[in-house]
Image (cartoon, rainbow, N blue to C red; front, side, top):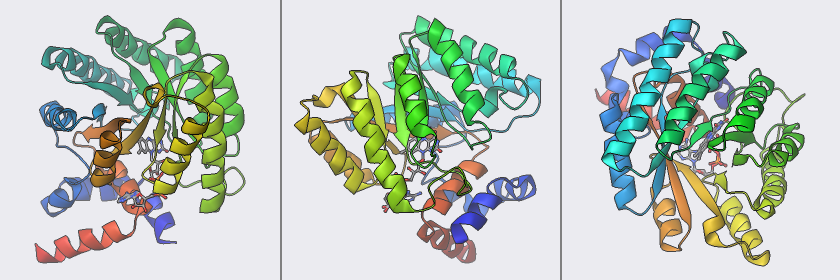
Length: 303
Ligand SMILES: Cc1cc2nc3c(=O)[nH]c(=O)nc-3n(C[C@H](O)[C@H](O)[C@H](O)COP(=O)(O)OP(=O)(O)OC[C@H]3O[C@@H](n4cnc5c(N)ncnc54)[C@H](O)[C@@H]3O)c2cc1C
């Protein structure tokens, strides 16, 4: 119930404006967001790299409704790719399709992605298309498939909570597409998504067991230790070397687990967001773990 309310609030623009301009939430937000500027993101990447992990940088922003804003967002990523190269930072980038125009026009979104992917290609880098709510799934896959036919440095995300995901994994694998597998962070009805955690977890295992033997380099994105153990066991049983896939975690979550995976010799990537539009991302993190909400409230009353 609380999770559903938080996911509803994550899409409310009025609350977003209030929260973004109300400084007291900042120190709680800082746990999950590296800062407002690209420099903050790059500093976080540097630290993560020094701790033996790689990263993916996300410029926060989504559901953009003005074409000009999508062009500006595209430019931020192009600039970020240049600075990543210049700084020798070991990070790729993650982009939300609705930040670069998916909800305005699929063609515009593809065009913006192409610009970003081409600059990434020049620098030997890679672009991950994040997956958003189910109202975007088909169109995101359409854009991905079209881009994947032209570029080999673009990947997609599949969410194990959706019934359709098994079929989507098959289709992406046919294109030799790189997948980030996650559970899914949005509020979805039971008509299209598994309602129980156990079912989402079982599907996660089923999907990773399809993905890992493909020989394509995939990302297993979860902080769930049971699923991480299942991934390790499956890889060992099937002689899939540790360097043929990676684990992915979010910035500020289960850092000690990240260090442990690095010590064990796994590739680990940290998703590092930066930017001012942190509200929807932050609220989804609260929804995943309502204990975070109490931490936020405690800081509110302390201010
Ligand atoms: C690298 C990465 C990229 C992602 N990209 C996408 C995407 O493109 N689209 C999408 O829909 N979702 C994405 N997600 C989010 C994902 O779908 C889940 O919502 C999120 O990872 C929580 O699920 P979990 O697998 O960690 O398992 P859970 O069962 O939710 O959590 C397992 C354990 O992890 C810890 N934990 C999990 N979340 C939190 C939190 N917010 N705060 C504190 N502790 C926490 C807790 O200890 C919890 O017990 C991504 C996640 C990761 C790690």
